[in-house]
Image: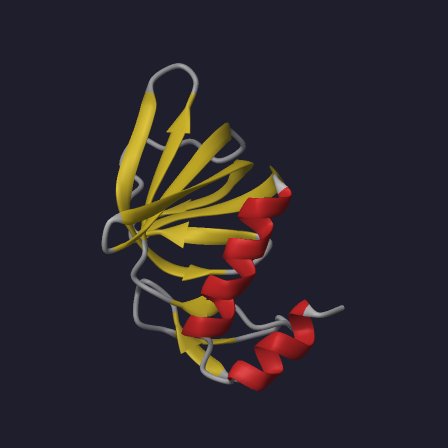
Length: 127
């Protein structure tokens, strides 16, 4: 387990067995009716993400998540469905509930590329 800090600066203990990758990928979270948040992700995994925007978000709300990857002239749109599971002053945690096969493949690549330990991330995602 490793130490980390919560939004108040208190040391917390990481209890997850699987890695999540720290990243600054832009994401959009939309809820019905009319909730919309756009901003950078603090981290991302195959199970969800943490978006550093949350004003007005409600824990428990179902949502759509969109991430657009751009490399020069080419663009790939990732789409997931999920639920907002936690709202804090620093942002919101979203748990993914479904995504297509292509989105899953691209998400795995994002996680490996941004992982602190690439080999460990590839091993965890090959299961």
